[in-house]
Length: 269
Length: 273
Image (cartoon, rainbow over all chains, first blue to last red; front, side, top):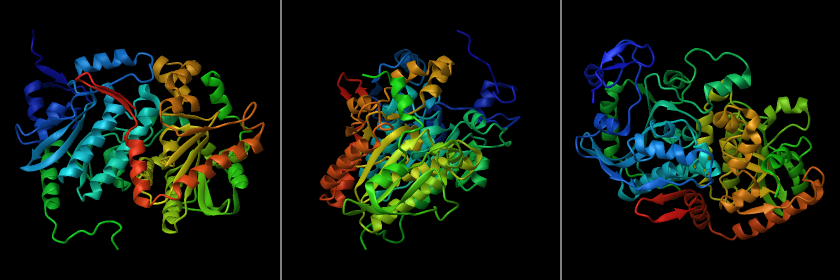
C-alpha cells in the first residue's frame, strides 16, 4: 500500500507534505486553517504521553426508532471512525494534572449527539464529580442526531443536568470548541463551560448558516459565527491557535488546582 | 392511529388554542410580566403569575399569533435569547417565592437569525436546561402544539411532561428532516412517520408522562373541553409534586432525564431507555 505523502488544505487548497503538516499540528502554514482532528490525535496533542485511559468505550448505539438508513450509517461509522462512537471519554494527565477528558469525533456522523454521546458525556461528568476531577472537553458537533429523534433531544437536558452535578462538587468544566460546534451540542454542555476556549476560526453557533440565510433572506455578514465573532459578542473567554492550546489548558488547570478560600455550597446560607 | 403528518397539521392548526388561551382558561388573576432585564421583552414568550385553582403559580409559554399580523410580531412563537432569559427570570422568581411553574410549549423552534446568534441563542437555551434541572420548585410542562427541538426543550425540563393528543415533539421538523435525508422537503409525511413525533410515540419511548385527550377533531374544535382535561392533568401533577421536598424533587427530575436514551453495551447486555 502506498503511504500518502501530501495533503491539501481544505480552505486554500495549498498542498503540504504530510510530515510538515503534522509537525504544524495540522494547521495550514499558508492560510492558518485548522484541520479537524480525530480523538487519537487530540489526545496526543493535549495529554501527557501514555496517560489516557478510556472509560465507557463499550457503549454502542442502537437504532431505537428503526430510522431509515441509520443502521447502515452506524455500520460505516463504526468501521471507519476511530471506532468509539462520536465521543471518546476517559481520564488523562495534562501537564501532570489528572483530568476527565471527552473528545468528540467529527469522523463519526459529524459528531452528532445521540443517546451514546449523551450517556458518555453524562457518565464522564458524574465520574469526575465523584472523584473530584476537573473536566476538559474538546467539542465539535453537527448537533443532535436526527436519526434518534426525540431521544437525541433529551440528551441535551441530560448532559446539561450532569454539568450541574460537576459544579455541585466544585470541579470546573473547561470546554474547547472546535470547528464546527453547532445545534443541540452548543445549546447544552458546550456553552456551559466555566472557561470556554475556542480554536481560531472555528464555526460555532446554534442554527446553521444556511438555515439562518433561508429564514431571514439576506446574506450573512463576513466572519459571522466564527470563534472571533463569538469572542467579540461576549460568548467565549479565549480564542487560541492550536499551538497554544495545551499551554493554555495547563495554566487554567493549575489555577483551579488549589483553593485559597473554602467554598460555600449552594444553599448553605 | 392517525398518520403522523395529519397530527403535524393539527399541531400547527391556525385555530389551535395558543398559550394565552390556555392561561386565560387555567389561571385566575393573571398578571403578565415582561422582559429579561438584559436586552428586551420577547413577544414570542409570554409569562406571568396568577392562581391555578387556589395555588399561586408562575405560568409561561411560547406565544404564536392568532392571525398573520400578530404572528409576524411574535415571530411565529420562535423565541430569541431574550425570550429564554425572560422565562428563566420568571422561573427563578418562582423559586424565590415557592411557586410551582407551569410551562406551555408551542414553537417551531428557537429563532434562527443574526441577532439571536449574536446574543447567544445556544447559551440561553443551555443555561435554561442547566437551571431548570436544579430549580427547587415543581415544574409541569405541557406541549400544546409544536414541540420544536431545542427551542421547545428550553422551557421543557420539568418534573412532569405532558402532551396534548395532537401535539408533536421532535428534534427536527419533518420538512427539515426530509430535506436532509432525501433532499426533498415534499417527503415530510414519510419523515414525520420516521421521527416518531406524536404524543403516542413519545409515551411509548418513555419521554413523556401522559397524554391529555383532545375531543373530536382536535383542540381547535373543542377548546373548552380540551382545557378542562388540561386543568385536571395539571392539578393532579401539582398535587403529587407539591408534597415533595426540594431535594427529592430535584433528584427525581435528574433521574427522569438521566435515564432517557437507548444504547447497548458491547458485552452483549442491552438497555433500552
